[in-house]
Length: 357
Image (cartoon, rainbow, N blue to C red; front, side, top):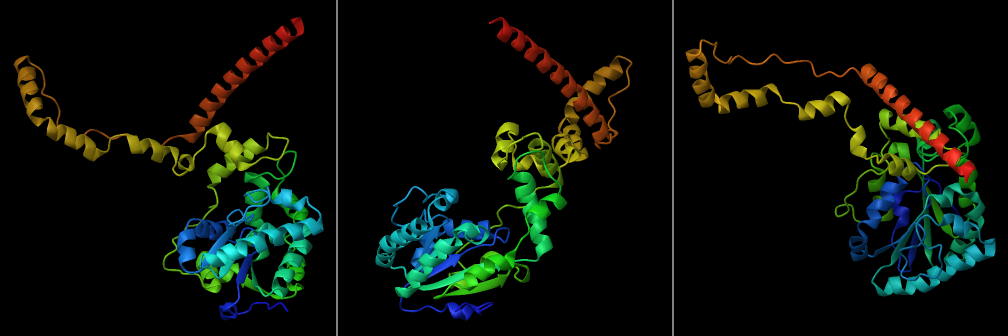
């Protein structure tokens, strides 16, 4: 029977083998949890935990081509019985090796297990069979307030990773097409037999990685972690939106990165801050004057001998380093228009050559 909001101590260790299945949901720190476990696999094994990965790619036995990150669609394309059988085959062959390595707990973390209901039945069936065979199974899922989830999900899948064809759609349109439906998915997992379903409130924990490690019984003190998939700045989001709006097909985030050669550092400071970093400060100029005091004195002697005023020593007047973004936009538009005309001329020439040939 499923237990909702069961306390952490319900995951107490038993003599038999334990499988922790973290099913997301997406946009609840899942990538951060996975990154922490992936980067500390050796530490986890010291404490008896074996991280299986997202698609069981870290299982000690590799039997199928879908055992690689990003291959959930390949697994989902199989029949229900094939999904169940293949998962069981990997688990049955892997568990003896995991136990032989001194581990009594395995962790499988994949947010698609929660968000893709077409595969729920087959995967839940596999877990029920493992439970009947004596494996203790605990399913962990995080949920969050619906408006916060939708805002984060739209930024991720509505703009950065455009998961639909055509131009960008606004938040209202995207939200109407992609309702969270947390409870619909939860019911499927809660109805599963032979395992606990622990539902955690993402908004109520200060650090979701620490909460997951604590609930699972993993060591906190030796696993460093950081937040993955930080929300982009407004400036970066604007450029990604403009870029993806020009693409008719769905668009992965790396396409913008590849075409625009974009790095996170590009968006972490304003134009004024960027330029100020390179221009001299008042202290820099004062140092130059001090370092060259002797040379200036000699030059002044020569100037005075020639009836000229000596070189000034008072500090330079500092100009404002604030940048008029409007002027930059105007200049960039002129350059863009010029390049567009050149491209148009080249396309015209190519068309003529193609027709002639």
